[in-house]
Image (cartoon, rainbow, N blue to C red; front, side, top):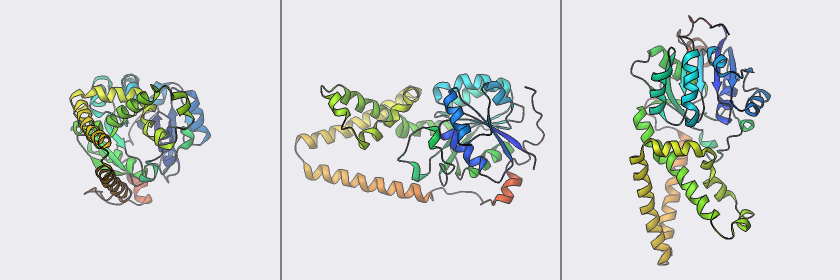
Amino acid sequence: MKAQTITIIGLDRMGASIGLALKQSTLDLTVIGHDRDDKLSKAAVEIKAVDQVKRNLGRAAAAADILVVAVPVSELETTLQVVGEMVQDHTLVVDLSGLKGPGLAWAQQYMKQGHYVGGSLVLAASALLDGRPDTNLADPALFKNGVFCLMPSVDLEPAAVDTAVNLGRLLGAVPYFVDSAEFDNLVQGTETLPGLMAAALFGTVQKSTGWRDMLRFADLPFALTTLPLTAAADVARLALNDKEATLHWLNTLMEEMKQVRQWVYEGEEELLTARLEALEQERYKWLLDRAKNDWIEDKGPDMDPISLTGQFFGGFLGGGRKKKE
């Protein structure tokens, strides 16, 4: 099979993990990387997540048969402006940023050619408690037995959809189709709310007169709870993308906290303990479900490496002509 080129825009832990998984596959692929941060690009090369790095975003996009965009929402519009002018006619653009509605709108506005699909890679259950974005922590199994949410537009060619599905399978993820508006609404509770909670917690503790002394004692619970602040700009974008949904989640959270506050004020140890233990069990069940990953009704047929090699591009990319750089 003739080598095909996949370009990854964004080389933090997610992008580098995608590169590692691709490089460890049986397919004859060339993986190109690009990142605004030269340190991340250098790290991706050092761990062999990419074959080469192109510092110019346009050149990196023009080289791709499949273009994976793994940048924050705050960088997505400017990225698609450049990408939309440079991708080849046959190129599949897979957008893994945090919001799908804006991404689809920007793709329709800026992409003059190519085929755009929104997607979201959900981490493997084993990686849920380590959200560090460092490139040198990349793992080819980061998405193994996870979920690949796909949100293709209604007019996307079936062959392009098949290629996106097979890309996810190559990473070990199960495809799951969802409406982009529904996806954006769901992430308000699972992404936006934790981000705003992290900001409120850190801001509250930081206002304490003993903050400097507390720094030396702050441990794992505080670090994990405030971890979403590493994507502060995206949290703000997520919160304001759908203000009504965000306010709903904030109001619900405050009602929950009011109840907890009342139990603490009244010294209701039995009630508070019962509530926390019940939630502990629910969280444990959720983690088990994530590990099993058997809640998807239609996982699609299993594909062995030989058939995958032949079907990965589905005949979709074979006729493309490369742009001259």
